Image (cartoon, rainbow, N blue to C red; front, side, top):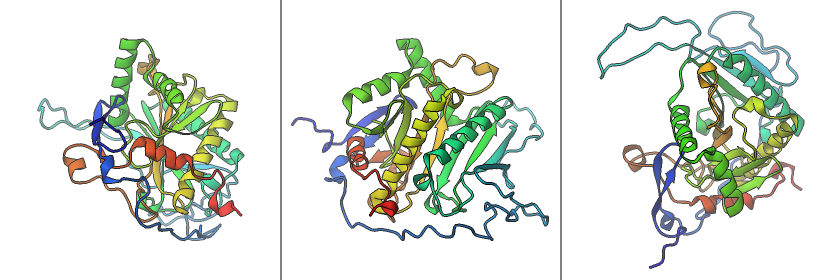
Length: 352
């Protein structure tokens, strides 16, 4: 029997993390099976006087005070009222026990509002609005990178992804340590550069541009694709066509073209199920600080991890075999890319 990647189970290797994923396409003969379910397209109020992220509203910081969110007109950044990391914390006692190790950490957590209106998302914003967001991300990276090793910019969109506030916003966590995901990516990308004398993800982009089977959209500077090793059904990566190590190396023209592919991607996500598509997304680039000056192995990239599989209400769960053995998916990366690619470029709420 001749192997067919769209029908026969197989494993795929993720060179960024040194992990394998089980692909079982025979469980889903077509990439679109079952009932089409849509959620309400109501985006809610433009201004909610009870939402602490709206301009001029009192923030919910657990303290009785007149701590108002300012009347911002574009983006707005503030320190999280309930941060997971603190700037000044004591160090725990030293221990040589290999089974019970812990270390002190320092950091800060910030919230960044994308827009003063609550009933708008990246998909519905102007390119200029998104460029303003990218510019502010770069400012935050440069400021926090002077103190911290890792600056993680991420957005949890939708209640399905644990977002408790529907106002368009993201979070920025800066920490004194290199977290697990970027730590393993740092190791694997460095190993690849040492072996092949080329950055892994630049080789990968070149191969994907040639294959053209997993690309969702592209422009002169950027490529959006479903990675060969994707875990989530419609997982995507945003990759540069030139070697960029950190977000602050992006030119003004590349900001505009990045805003364009970001907007187009989330429009296609929303059009898939006629809903405001939930996801977790974030950016990975070379760590900051002097100890990471040698970072030619790093390539800046974005990751979108949406949970939906068959409809607006059916979520893909990581459970069972996936938690205890190895991640598994039914839809192949090629099928997912084709489905996303085929979605209209105009948002369903703005289409006649």
